[in-house]
Image (cartoon, rainbow, N blue to C red; front, side, top):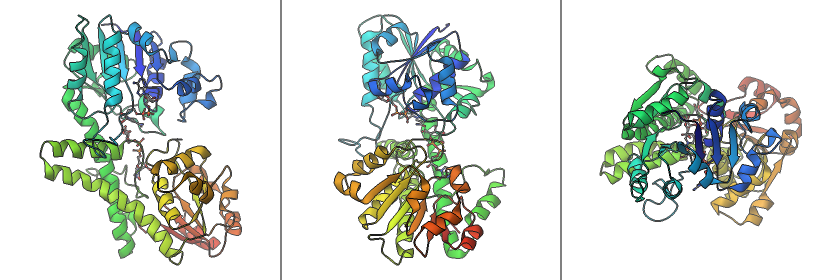
Length: 459
Ligand code: NAD
Ligand code: UGA
């Protein structure tokens, strides 16, 4: 089946970059990304591509090249569904905040709404592609909604999970380790494989059954997050034994069975997916009565929470057991470098803990806007919005943020932090001047030489 028109429901961190790359590599296919959020769509359509709603290296250039030619952003969801032969569902699937499975299961209401929308509007046969990360067996629910419309429209459902990481999304999409397509209908699978085939070698396009595909996505994130919790667990042991976690990571990473990637000890992983997807995996395992399996994976989250807490506890105890009234400058708020995304960023939880101890927090992040810092803290509902406003100040210049600070906490591994004038920063701070390097990006000897009291993770 030849596809000429694609629609993607959800213009977020996945829908936007993924469809931009599909459009770039398939100039003959018209790609329309739709969203209920009119403000987000307007930002995607902004003439000035530096104002796109998502910051990703390389994204603005691709949008500038394709937008208006074969890539379109719109709020006309029904029209786009009606006109397309293939529809990607790329909406958010957050952890449920209410009812059964609260705090654990994925909230599938947005996905279900999409399925119902497609069922209502479709007059011709459609291939529906699950791009969102979904619990294993979700395709069954989508199928049931689509197949009970009473019309004779035929729907094929495919699972095509996305493995891109934020900050490197465009590179990941252009050179994926693999593309995964799960489905029943060979014709539908090949239609999607052909689209990726414009730039991905066929032997890197895996075809599986739907359930393996859905479960592989949760499993991949669980394994990745597990590596971080594993090295973070060792980092605490290193701090007690005078071992150095970077040396340990290097030594074990050279074993080709272990591999060297994803072994950076940190303040704990953040981002919209690792925690959500593991909680979901734990919930699914428990719902099948597999308690040992559930407990095993839950420990990855428990350790991650411990790592965030340990970082702020250590900061407080080093500052003579009180941070009350002291200025703590946080460099970085995003959950990793090269993104403006702050979802589940460790910085939010460390700040919240320090605010409970009455610290004054100064935040500088190269890409995160001021209002996002406040809305992230307000969302926790730990204190009133007024109190957050009083205790937290944001800066658009790092040197202003660190002025008169008692300590600096490095929360994100932005490259620019390494090239700052650290002598000047030392001069601006209160003494003793402390640095808590939550990302191990600065050189201890250089910092100590300047006069800082420097500590990092796992050293
Ligand atoms: P996001 O919140 O950035 O974007 C989702 C978009 O869907 C929002 O703009 C929202 O307004 C829109 N939406 C919700 N319901 C809608 C509806 N009924 N009709 C139209 N639009 C609707 O989310 P995201 O980060 O792009 O994640 C989307 C999915 O992809 C999630 O399941 C996530 O787990 C998965 N995923 C995310 C990443 C990542 O790096 N962010 C990577 C791989 C997979
Ligand atoms: C992650 C996965 O890497 C993607 O493959 C997946 O598609 C995506 O989740 C998803 O499903 O959403 P992402 O969360 O964007 O991507 O970014 P990562 O690079 O995985 O980083 C996640 C967190 O782990 C960040 O806070 C990062 O700083 C931290 N991290 C990463 C470490 O602390 N140490 C490491 O060695 C690597």
